[in-house]
Image (cartoon, rainbow, N blue to C red; front, side, top):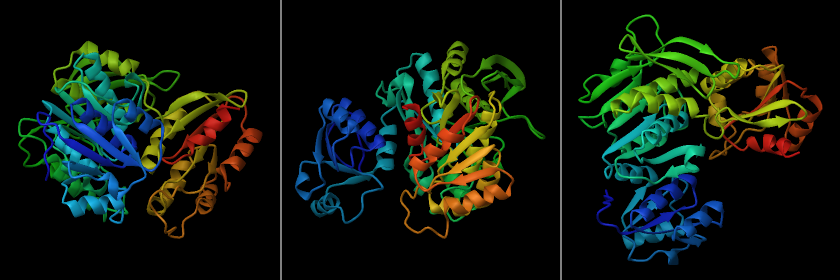
Length: 463
């Protein structure tokens, strides 16, 4: 495998450079002195920013864009073998890396690399950790899967002491990483278009845990079933976090938890059985107590001061699309947008919503992929029925073409059978019209899903 060495900058070419993650990685290399160029289908706000960085962007992916002076090419998963640049790169024998492999290679160039994994909560916990490092004035380099207001986007190019990134299990991409500190927030069934079953997923997380450096730290949720399967035989230090339950108490847990009027939790941080400090979060929901506990365990692993931890967690108000309060619409309806697209995530969002004062809770849900809808059909119906009113948009197909017999209309019927009012409309325009006629002052409306359902709320917000 090609090795990226910051002390020896070379020419790097990104096929699909306009992607949110690829553009961030390209920016890091450019600022480290590499000669960076790449291609994308069409100009965008992202490619405009890349060009301002001095990065050459080609529009249209053509064989003639590839030259022999390219030392290494980087591909996204969206690039297929029939892509003309891919074919030319292979013909010329130019070394190549996947996006995940590049992230792994970048990790080797930092003093401490931190990788945050788990089925849920990666973006929020990565953001909390980033805020702690920023409050500690450590000048971290950050790549996060959402827009973090404090860094003005999803990427921050800082010094070489800390590199912070999310670690996604899909297609086993996180197995290309080299973390010094790794977090495993939870392990559940998901991405069943790639993994066989939960055991297959757990096996991948076990392999990920084994990638942590010998003098590093693994921080893991004690509620994960049979954590010993993941941790046994590891050479690194293992730290647990979680909410207290029967059995052994986690190393990091929360005591005296309560919620303010906006659903934001306060709790006493308990470390190894002793209360350490009081924490008031700026984001709602019990799930964020767990995310904060993981971040606190991380803070101790890097020696962050308590004042930095308290300030960071209190002032952090979330990233885009994570229970994001976007404003008031339709003469007094609170608009929230959320990325939740798995039943566990939806349940967490629903519970967070229940802790905020409102009348009826409306959820406009856009299922993400036919595979996930089929795999968790009954679970989706169950958690969506926690709302007062549910509106279903068409399934966001993403990379899939086979419907597997699934549709949002079928899911809407299943929710109705649970006793919750549920509606299906075939277009965003019809959903907007229905909401304008039926939402009442004091209601809360959540647009929910990993696709483009947020556009409905934006349209209502803009009149």
